Picture 1 (cartoon, rainbow, N blue to C red):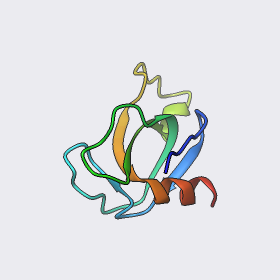
Picture 2 (picture 1 turned 120 degrees about the vertical axis):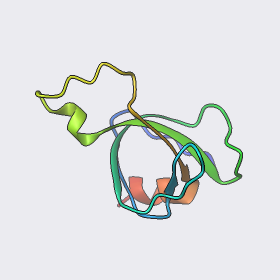
Picture 3 (picture 1 turned 90 degrees about the vertical axis):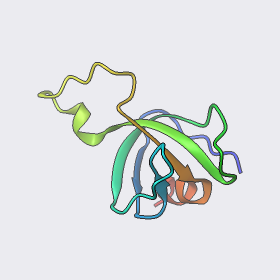
Length: 85
């Protein structure tokens, strides 16, 4: 399943729906604004790479100079569900 999400889409992923770059499953909720989804393939079928920013990066007091500050993998189905909640 190919997932396309526009930049700045807000995602709220639940525990178990996302993993760190080391493959460690997330154990908390994760809220982020999407920079891009997909790109290079992941090692696990059904999971896609997601790059984004934490919601606080939009605050005037935070000037995030990076193109993205969060990089995770997420289950394709979870991205679809999160984008449509």
